[in-house]
Amino acid sequence: MRPWTRWQDWITALVGIWLFISPWVLSTTGSADVARNAWIIGAAIFIVALIALGTPNNPTAEWINVVLGVWLFISPWVLGYTGVKDGSWNAWIFGVVTVILELWALSTRRAVAGGPVRGTGGLDAR
Image (cartoon, rainbow, N blue to C red; front, top):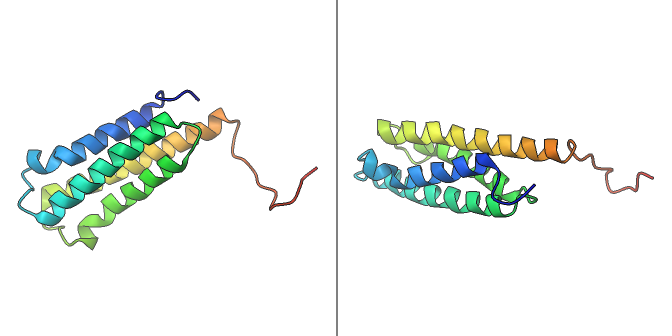
C-alpha cells in the first residue's frame, strides 16, 4: 500500500483534531478532566494517525489508535466525568468511531496482503 492513501487514517486524523478543539466548541473547558483528556488523547490520535498514514506497511500505529479509542470510550467512567454530558458523549462517540476506523484500516491491510498471516509456531513449515 502506498503512503498517505488510507482514507480511514485520514478520518482518524480529523477525529484527533475534533477532540483537541472540542473542549472549546462544547464549552467543557470548565472540567479539567474532560478538557485535558480531550486535548491529550486528541493530539495523540492525530499524531499516531499521521504516522499510520506515512508508514502503511506497519500496523503498529493503527493498534495504538485502537487502544487510544478504547481509553477514550472508558475515560468518562475512569476519570469520573459521566456527569458532564457533552464531554462524556463526545468521548463515547469518538472512542467508538476511532476503534471502528482503525480496525477497518487493519482489515483492509489484511485484504490487500492476501489475508491473515498464519504463523507456524516458530517451526519451519517446509
